[in-house]
Amino acid sequence: MPIPFGDDITGIRLENGKIAVLKTDMLIAATDVPPGMTPFQAARKAVVMNISDLASKGVEPKAVLVALGLPGETSKEDIEGIGRGLNAGAREYGAYVIGGDTSEASDIILSVMLFGICDEHYLVKRSGSKPGDILAVTGLFGKTSAGLKMLLEGLDAPEQLRRVFLEAVYMPVARLKLGLKLARSNSVTATIDSSDGLAVSLHELRKMSKTGFCVTNLPTAPEVDDYAKLHGLSKKELTLFGGEEYELIVTVNPEKWDMATRIAESVGGRLIPIGHVTKDNEIVFVTEGRKESIPPGGWEHFKTSSST
Amino acid sequence: MPIPFGDDITGIRLENGKIAVLKTDMLIAATDVPPGMTPFQAARKAVVMNISDLASKGVEPKAVLVALGLPGETSKEDIEGIGRGLNAGAREYGAYVIGGDTSEASDIILSVMLFGICDEHYLVKRSGSKPGDILAVTGLFGKTSAGLKMLLEGLDAPEQLRRVFLEAVYMPVARLKLGLKLARSNSVTATIDSSDGLAVSLHELRKMSKTGFCVTNLPTAPEVDDYAKLHGLSKKELTLFGGEEYELIVTVNPEKWDMATRIAESVGGRLIPIGHVTKDNEIVFVTEGRKESIPPGGWEHFKTSSST
Image 1 (tube, rainbow over the protein chains, first blue to last red):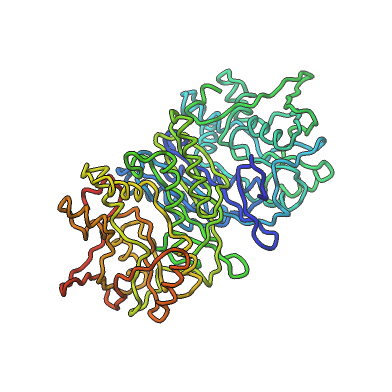
Image 2 (image 1 turned 30 degrees about the horizontal axis):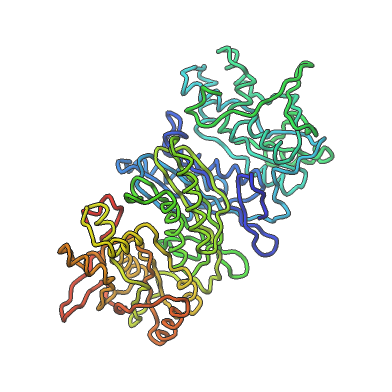
């Protein structure tokens, strides 16, 4: 198998050094769809969250298959919204919905399967981080955590923050262009997407690469900083223990850092350094001379958010 | 797209005349799992029903991906049964379960995706039937209908029939070897599997091939004949309007009929002629000089079986 177990995607070797990459993830309305999200948005997100995993591997998505479970009473309008959302999610990233299946279910279920092809040579795994590599992320964190706190715990925010947080929850974006470009540059030694939360995803990467990380810069979005102050929340928790965020976490060979940042900028993206790879088997956060361990744990589903 | 819309599977052209074939179908415990079926059997069936669609196209299954929805209270034993069932279904047909995803759901949901590769040249479509072709099936029908009548309507059967019917319901078999061999022989002009019931599947084939069928021989299993007599049921209805049966329905060039039957025998299978392809746009059943139309309609889920 060209991709080791423990990765979120699987692949099969074809001829000519190519790999057929497959990825599946299921979105279930009762546990994965927060209040106020439309069927269009839920369906689009079901595709985007799968695209994000391919993005982290440097794999171009080609085709989307959908197995749809729908309660008998689902309205025509909602079904059309779902169809439009699936297509929108695929088309935004150059893929097509090519087929699927519909069943009757007690809840809305969107089981999305993605098919992509890549050169084995360019496939970025989770297991390549080397001590000394620069640890970086492709965007700032915490907006989804804040949005879900608003929606599920009623911790409101001023209109301007509100809009930013709801956009993050309802219309997440996968970093496909950036992931593809970085994979082809050979500057990135390992990648993972942050869909399980920054801390959990860092621990995944740590385990697969058999390294550690020293985080020196917490990539908190400024709006999240404001929101944390407003409600007396921990900015660190909002940043590290969120989830349903689709930034990439990458480790970069320091000699290729300048090239990697230029590549990111060339597709309108960015790389934000947050620390470096160590040879220790742990993840530490160093700030103002104090050092503390970052535990795994974080987001599972929005239902259990209060436990994190 | 190498496979027309309306087919149950979809494909993407690769290099060298190959097609990557994808197929997905979702099994939902509440609507697709009859009483008495174990988690092992349900999971195995979730794979087999997808294999059957590939069999009808002459496509060898390579990899199985599974998105699993499980209620929080699912026992460890049931989860292990599901795992074993998925693997059993795949291994019986030479494929491997290579990955997947688990989510929390309110019902047991098995969303199975199959990936296969075939030469475009050998792909058998639903649209190739020609007037004069022989219409044939790969096995006898009605055992699953009878089994579901036993399980859902309490119409019991003597032990010997009981065993045959329950085997058909709980441990269905896909005609993969036969489908692959027939596809490679170029004797078959169109194929479909009979998972939606014989009548419905014949109508699908008729629509896609823009032909008609004249059925002269009803392929009823002898046990179903006995069961129909026992309960005063219509043998024709049990045969035509069942479902969840995984025989292949094929149309064969009459000049290649002998070759096709020899091929079927060479893999321990058989081809049972049941009529021929006509140029009319309807399906008729001719028996004892009487001619009647076979309507579409039939099986949807076992829940609605009383309406068919």
